[in-house]
Length: 375
Image 1: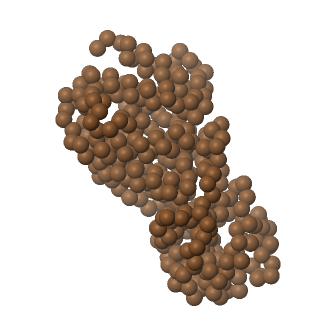
Image 2: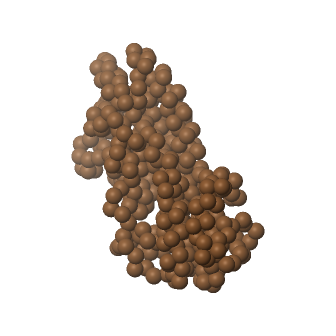
Image 3: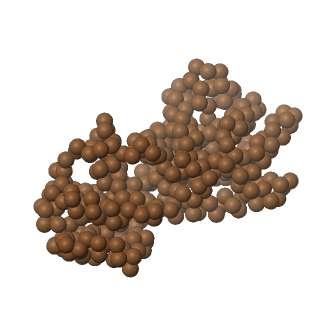
């Protein structure tokens, strides 16, 4: 097993957080490559990582683990979020149980595998997979090889690119998984731009503690248990932490029917999403309006995506499927952004040329109009 004595992750967060003007595009412009290796090959992997690291690629390996967090758990999370799993195959690594376990885990998760073979050939889990073959004394050849056969093509054409999912059956399970998935990204030292569609979004859930009167107002004439409130609040805080650092792009439906909860509950919920929008900056928050949305879609950076395929009236979204499969998340981002642009064109009839940067204020104005309407 390799040494666990590695320096912590870089303290600087995603470039998205440091440069809000890039939030629209920066979540999909880098391929994450996880390198698995034997500790005997430490010097070699340092050179390989240096060659691979460019603006288009982000090399991740155990050099980036955080102090104070579980070694094995962090390794698993890095592999789960990788676009490409790249084992460094040498005479040493092929005999290391830890490397073989990482390979097996990546294969099981259907992460595309692109081995680098130095003095040996892929076997076991990797038998039959075309490797990047390098001579021990000519590692610089790696640069020309990945230029001739780009890694994004390897990722697109690799076997096993169908995503695996976890399913949350209930609204409460969905909220818990949002908290866990968001925390996993933050614990790796990153935050992501939030994309979400469906209802009034998670950002109309109160941030206040459970004893605050806002929770009574939210549910109007219905009684809801503390556990439900607790986990929804955790969902709101978890997604909010990412949105406040990196920004958000949301599609909301302010015309929803809230007869189940009552008129006062509807008013409070509209006020809640309005207050969230006011708290955000126009350059980091974009809003489109839609009606009769039947599903909810949430994407955090290009780290994970969650899609709710059912909505039970009065019970929220159920049967939510989560995936960290990087290729699938990237494709879902493109799908979301196309949908957002389509909705934005028809969201504000009095502002037919409303831009994404102007959409936050347009949404606030629309909500103000709804709140002024007589009950």
